[in-house]
Amino acid sequence: FAINSWGQDLYWTRFADASLPITRMSLLDRTPIEIVSGLPTRTGGLAIDGTSMFVSGGLFGSSQVFEVPLGGGVGPFPTVTSPGGSVTFTELDDVYVYYSSYSNPGLVGRAPRAGGANETFLANEQTYGVSVDDRFIYWTNATNNTINRLAKPVEASTGTNLICRVGKADCDGDGANDCEVDWTSDRNNCGSCGNGCAVNEACVGGVCDPIQ
Image (tube, rainbow, N blue to C red; front, side, top):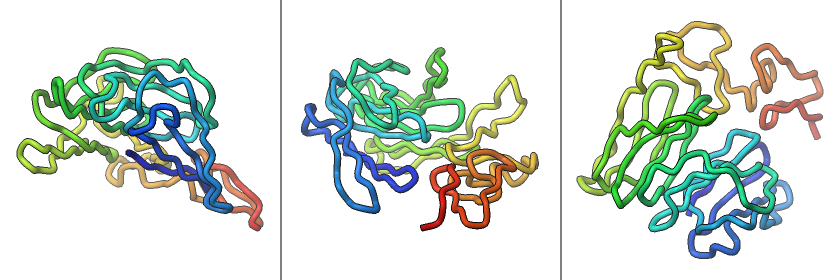
């Protein structure tokens, strides 16, 4: 149903088989491993931040978004938000989990990853995919066959709507170029701003690893 990656691993969900909800496969040996059990629903959307997977119930599935350890495990898992409808896809930035719901009712919204109230940006439409960049929210709308964009609201705590996507950072403090560093692969800013890897290391998934 959904696919994502982190470092040298690929992850995907299976909507059709609730007993095997999430699979991980190393891109090195290409061996798939079922890593999660005990979710109370079929799985749909899958967003990753390097520590956790944020998993939705998928089309005609659950209205919940669960936080599952990146290494997998056995449920029950904590619920991040339960906005209603069939939550189809999920996406992340450093502060929020975003979600789309195809039906009952269709909506686009977000909730703080640390817990808090949901914000709804669109309701009563057949929304499907959802994505974000540092300043905007994007989604597909099956009602009118469009791709839509909305600026993120300005944050009261910062006075700006700049919130870095997962894996990005504003290391130079210049809002004009948004979050300019990819800390998942930048050898000079690996995992965080200013954290440099050694000459014989590469930055993989935000970790300095010896070059093979």
